[in-house]
Image (cartoon, rainbow, N blue to C red):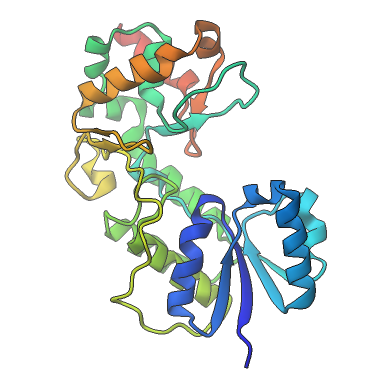
Length: 292
């Protein structure tokens, strides 16, 4: 009997979800296909040929309309993308992709970028990374926003499964390396939930872990936000380029010198950094300004 074929498209999580699903659902074949790969005409052609010659179910999160023609030969199931932003409320990205310049790092501290944008010295910047300021700017309330977004996105799916996944992800502080990058533990939990949503038989695989394909990047869990993270805070970062920072001063120096210092001031001033929780560099200025 031939295996069921599933294409898995959840952006950066695709490469971890596919092998995680295959471990707990060995009767099926799971093929990772991050959406950005569809920009390659050769990939599109291969997908068309595969879906036409095989029984395929494509699982993803809001596939772009321009690729809807690829779904004519297969079934498509839309399942929400899972993120745990509450662990990393200060983690953000560039919200405007039409800038005249690019940053060498994809991920940013919303607070640190705002401080640099406002001309705050690195010595004074350190003082803002404190429990008092995290409470003042609203970071401490991140769980409420994250939880609302999560449950709204799953509003038409089995509530017991969705509630169980949220509880399990929150209970274990090692489920996510960043807001959108699960660890092997996180991938296993998400994969089990997805498999049950699409009514696949799940086998017990407690001692089987996938490679930590996204472990190259780990964002700090800030001291002062232990109520959100459920673990002792530490200003420790592991960057994609292999650099490791073990204190806030090293992190600030890196971004001030090698990231923001390499970009022209007009680009800095026209940039907006933010995340899905609603934290961004524009509103952050209102909390920083009174303390300068």
